[in-house]
Length: 445
Image (cartoon, rainbow, N blue to C red):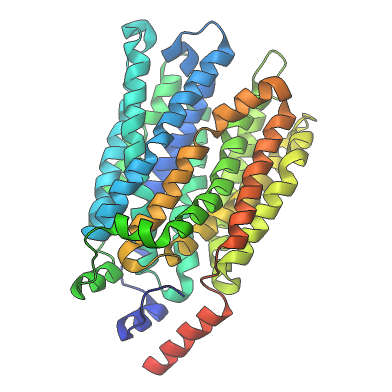
């Protein structure tokens, strides 16, 4: 199943996991929820408010592009955060990274809600915004690896897809919470319309810290440390030995994140922007909220499905659906029919995206050895984020000469990349691996 050697202790955890398995999964989910809460809060604010608040552009399209550019800057530095977090996770443990990333991430998110605007401090406003996005990007880069791997390594081996689906469900949960807050704050006739969503993240940060501080260190990392198998330079080790796997992870992740940013960030601007919007903002947000609410469940269900049928088949299904849905997605929303717009969000998020997101946690972890797992998974995951974070800006730019069909091609292209990566990546939890674990557990009784 992985390059980790099976032991009696691991055989016991294959059945029951650690006592902290559920608490770890929930604590990890808080961080991924904040990450995606901020993602949508920032993306929505960039599309609807930041032109006036920070960039002071007469042309609203230029303002939106600048807003998405600062959005992309935060993603551009995520690989650095992934390198730092991955290295520390493999060297000193998963828990310190998990706690430290949440603190930095939370403070930076709240600070956005406190920033002065262009009208107050001039050009210093967008500069401060960009600086905070860099800090956020570093923290976000370190967050995912710690959250997923802590959950994965505490979980029962036979249910790792289901358990890692819990923090991955933070993606739709963050989207859901951010939309609910924006639906409320958008009724406010003041700067609170965009400030409040960032300030309210304080609640999630406090809850996450309380849970994460009570979680024990990863049992697999502790065992690796006791055996003296912690490598001196995990980054160098994983890049030298597993660089091909890292490239595959980047391709796999690009399908999920690239498609997600098109349908969540760009689609909102496409449907509600311009002089003749396709639909009202309430309709688009209804679709987004409905799909996000369903996604809290479907992400975990897809993760559990990978425990039954393997990681690769589920990911293959998701990438094929992404490719096939690219043009029908826009043809359906272009009708302006509210039901069809909601349907597009449900298919694009609750089915296509969540099939991919629900599979990533266990699959990416299983592709690397325990002593370089944090570094390998984080590098692949966050380097892809650095690319896909610019997808909303790319989609907006492509739409200028080509219209919606150009954006559909972008959506399809990330799906093709994901499909190729899926076909090139080995299965880690197929019938053979499952039978091996079952046999080992049976012999250890």
